[in-house]
Length: 589
Image 1 (tube, rainbow, N blue to C red):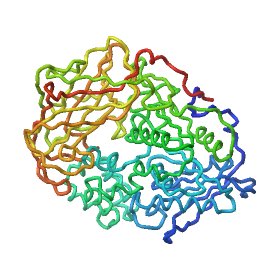
Image 2: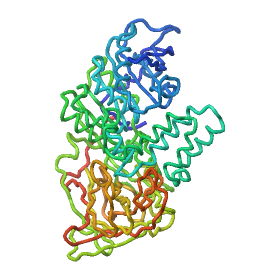
Image 3: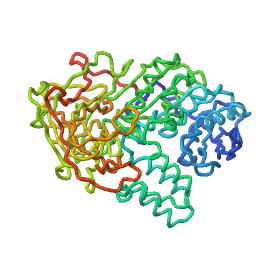
Image 4: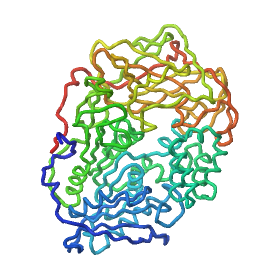
């Protein structure tokens, strides 16, 4: 393979195994409250026996079955590490009540310190993993285990209320489905297990039902039903969500200062979370903090992203990357200096070929995010459906309908793992407004945060406003770039509920996240606005009822107001043309 992405320049010798085999032992490790967690210990071996000596240890704590860590564990055991794969409390073979994220910090501390005391350990411990496995690392950092020396965390949330359960003040469809999937893994009845798995595969019919009525799916699975119910018991950002397990970004000042390597992708729902944690650790810690952001979805690392195929250079050789990282910090091996952040700038490619979009792209490096030299640019939404650099002189508006019985579906983007799709395929819908700029007469390079400021009204007692930034290619392919959503009744930062008055104008400021995208001459920027993102987000029924018990439905007319004293506008972060020349990407093997 050519030009595999590495954070560090490493040689082929890293791939050579130090030990010909491994041995795995399964045992139960007691936490401080006596709960025993199922743990697989993978040891370096020779001739069918554990190798002599003490080794650095890597810990991967998972809610997805510790057996899923086997390939990773075998790799590291052959390279002179002990890897511990553990089922989190309440998952699979581990004891304990199902309470996701609640005790992960304490359990992580206990597991790390247990590992450091074992005869096969040299006392140096690292942690690694993605998604929930990244979140448990953040939680453990807050507990400051003495023997934790380095972390590798990918695609992890840092504020689960804002990024997972109640994005933009609207209940997420992803969290209930995640809990349902966990329940299916523990369901002993094969028929019911199959029924639950069918809902997970296609949750649309289940998600159309009012939240309270969906509780029947958790019959006999009380812990899971309780976890599902907790989402709706705590719609605002209260003490429940401020606990370290859900909100590690709020406890960065308590985190142990160790080297941290963070990984995400532009189409990962936690891309902005990863960049935020990167900035916080870079600012607060003296140990090296490094980041990588590629053109990837939550299932990161490949060059394929939905209908798109990126260059070969976009692939992540994660095993080699992880090995180099832990060899440096747990074995003391020298490594070349590396920039704090490497990020992939999408764009510049040929476009559609053989049924796939080829966006192209290149790797860049920076000491900060956004990159130095980036600046803001405003584009205004106009009453005739354009994006313009000039604010409209007169106030106007465009309206669209929303029917809760036919909610606007979400395709592609960050929140359904669809990644890149042509948003204009499948026919036009009347419940989506589009504001498009003219074809660009010169290249535009986006690199940083994106915000949308809107003035809106609704005829209903509540409404969601969902927005997407789109790159329209010269042949018409509508490529999703970034997205966001706000619920009018919970539009404030803490999510507290406020009555919505039909016909009243509301000013909204919506974060669409970050991107790095080169738009070539002839491309157009577009903003799409709707009032649904189903099933990624719960349907707003427009009745003003509390989400848990809402059962009515009200068809609404939403209006986006343009011009006037509070014009609706898009704000993007751009790099000047002088800063836009390509830079070498990370060197591969």
